[in-house]
Length: 320
Image 1: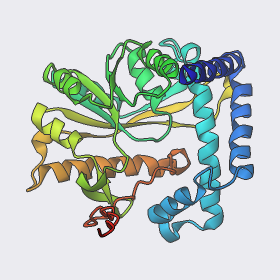
Image 2: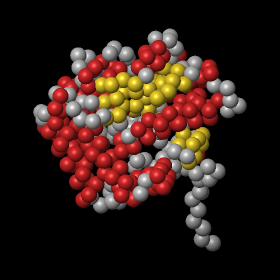
Image 3: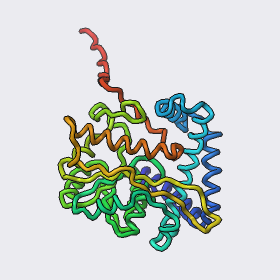
């Protein structure tokens, strides 16, 4: 009962916040988000903001290409971006419409994506925690392309329902990340479209491929599904461009496809590793365009090739 009331209280606070943000003009909401992101970076304890994780990741990714001041600036701008992303999600329902898509969105390699969608083959839309991935998904819904979105269930059922409805408001369907493989298989077998993120550490069972020049454990399920169901993989992104509030635009994004990977064209001894390498390299190219819009606080290089998980030492039993 106590947990239920906590969930209700969290949801009430969240809906109040949503109502306030949704009522704000886009320019004002963006400025508030920018101030909040800057304050989050400057004043909160660095342990709380996972600063060292982000700093280590940037060191792995760029090495001597950036200095300490540049790394700190990327981390600060990352938090500003994430706060703005939350604001944009809340206002998205009234800011992104089919009538204004051409004004607020710029498309990169649109033809390749349209060809994939009309190919009569299943499609895996793959992205990472880069830019505003929710805008990219909503964009396809606005144009009538139905997708099945793989997402993690939230602990709070009221918040989970709100985010589920948010993602489904443009005609999409949601598949739970936990235990959702069978549902994904059914959709792919029927020629459907699956949208998912594929840039988190996959643990010891993942396939290790280079990501920013360092081996990173990556989920092999994406490549396996593409091979089994003859699915095309569209590696995409949605990155924020310069603000154009003065032109009356509440959003300004590039929705792009970095690469379309066709498993039929893969010629390698290890097809799973090659597909995984290809889509990881495509994600890296997209992130390099705007590194401050990537979520660097994930421990992307947590797993180390060849490292076995340590077993917990059992306490010794007392004699007699």
